[in-house]
Length: 333
Image (tube, rainbow, N blue to C red):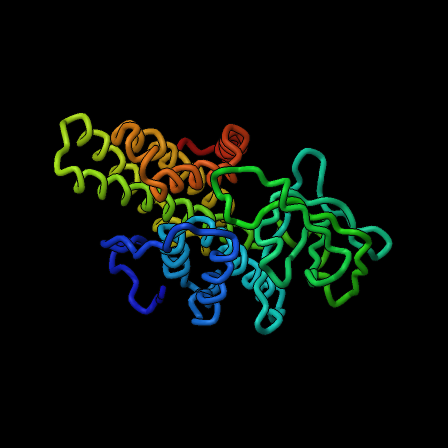
């Protein structure tokens, strides 16, 4: 069981790796683990804007270190609860939430004549969740996923990484939207202060996933009982990348709520953590060689999961946007 009563004194990551989930995992088993966390209160995290971001992000990193598919769903639920709280609303008791806002390849939800339509890709938890906050144009809609107008297409998710995240396309077929299911005014969702804070929370999950890969590398070296200088160099590089990302997240957690431009802080943080994750993904298989990639399902799955999940960062597009922020701000650092 995951509990957050005792967080690390200095940092976001615990010193010792957590107990992993049993294998094989499945959508059903991840759903059961998510319900267990929810029932135990382990998803009741400090709300953004209350000064508790270190504890919030430490919890998200801890779940990511255990399993990234579980963390993907946990982060989505906690983000939805934070969004509702920022709007002055209360979640439906007992409901697990997601946030479905992707606009990929010309798809996306639309709101016309009081009805929700369109296709949203990359909807995680499409069969496991009870409700979802769906971005439709400039509005955010709280959708009851038992509505017959919610059409799920899990077969569209073909990834090996994040395979148990219960993801896929969702088609909304003329769902009636009432005033009490609209969250905030037009353009509120991406314009609110909490949008940047939520982006930092995703980076915390990436950090946890990277730490899980690092745990696997250390376990491999200890099991083999030997490490040559080349392997030690890779291990040192991974350690430096992981601690650099953790330090960046800690700095962001302590400053972003008071920052004049919180999205600049979040963008910088996400870019730095993404860079560290790519370092981990590069060094880990070069250190271990082929054996654990072919013979250790947990290690291979961690690498595959992390490679898919970190692509929530849009690579050069996000870096270009960050560069534009820096140039427009007239700052040299």
